[in-house]
Image 1 (cartoon, rainbow, N blue to C red):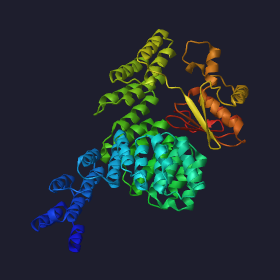
Image 2 (cartoon, rainbow, N blue to C red):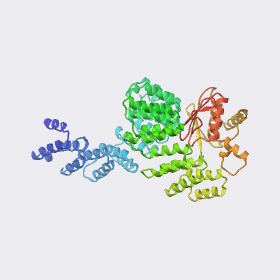
Image 3 (cartoon, helix red, strand yellow):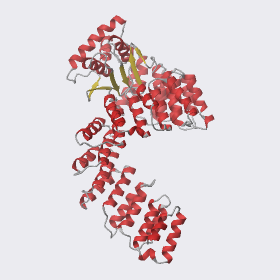
Image 4 (tube, one colour):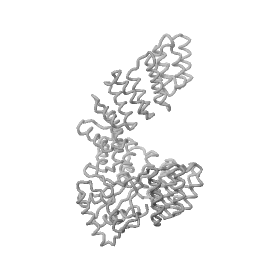
Length: 576
């Protein structure tokens, strides 16, 4: 038996497994020594040397398969490219004379997590309860992980709360689930609770979840707390953790701190590390730094991939380096790389922002693949910015043909017509929106103060300090007049009076958030604001002036990029 175990361990290919099987069959051990057959089956189903289709063939040769035999196939398929087959094998196990065990459920749940099979996971959860496996901590953690990955955070939270004993993996699963499930506030709170109340030591997986949550919120101070913990516990030797730190600082608006992490990494810089840093510079309008880093990759012995080129193209895009961007795009072929839809989209955006709409249109028509919705939306947006009605109508028709029902498509076309005072066409577009039940996404902005997120919508009066916020806006308005500020009412595309347009502009969500930041923080403290849509032209002018008048650094992260306002200037150099 010991010799056979040693022989199985030495199997490094399917032909070796077949030779062992032949030996077992000729010596009658395959049928009369079930434990040996099970070991061979497990090897064939789970090890890199095995083959799942042959494992299935082996399984069918076993007269009375044991629970372990069934589990071997469920486990093998759970970690294969076809995890749904594991769920089918689990169902077959339930119909067999053999009883399932906790491992059967664990393997099946892992398959559900990989296949994002939420309803199947709920069915297995009921089986776990029925068979009394609920006390198994590892099984509960797997169940929690499934719910988190399929986005059923309430169920994940319920499983977590009902656990009699929680290990580090259960905390990690819920923190990651909350971060990925658009509940980053709760993820950060759970990370804090884990350390401060439970006295547990977060590991690499924990900090990755916490950093992801900080990135989403732009929660710089919380991110710094996580960074200090990483340094204290020497987790910065992990390359993936360093990559997440770079991403976190970049998304919180502090690209210089992101670069410090990049420069001082104790571990090897991977391709992902370089790409993350290039994209960080691109998002912040630091095109020359991004392109310099892009050039340095080859000297560092790192082969640039399609993502590297995309980051470099985005940097050209945000800085208006049109010729450089087009040249970079054309150079991809010479490097053996095939441009994908995102690369074409970046070039279309680059040309569109520069007003070269016909060239952008020609690029779309020359694509070897089918243009996606985003490309036509990009052209529509550029047409709106340059008031090109004809091109806007072409892009709009294409979007309708593709079945796009996004409110932004209709709003952009409506705005093009409104800018030319074609109110009948505006009415026609709005009627089409009504018929299709398309609703406009409301703009909102939020800022963090002492760990609390304060959210604002346009014209908001729901905040407890709204009167003080509006009073501050009046003060700002008065002070700005000395700098020659005139409201950009031309961007309010409604058939209303000039005074109403000014009021509509002056209560935009990002202005409310900045005003709240001014009344709530000490002089000289930077203010961070995150907006779900692009910042408007008037808000851009106003926040530049606020940064000068009140001597504040203001960082606004909008849907497309970062704007760093300081001393009356913006990092985007008024090109966005």
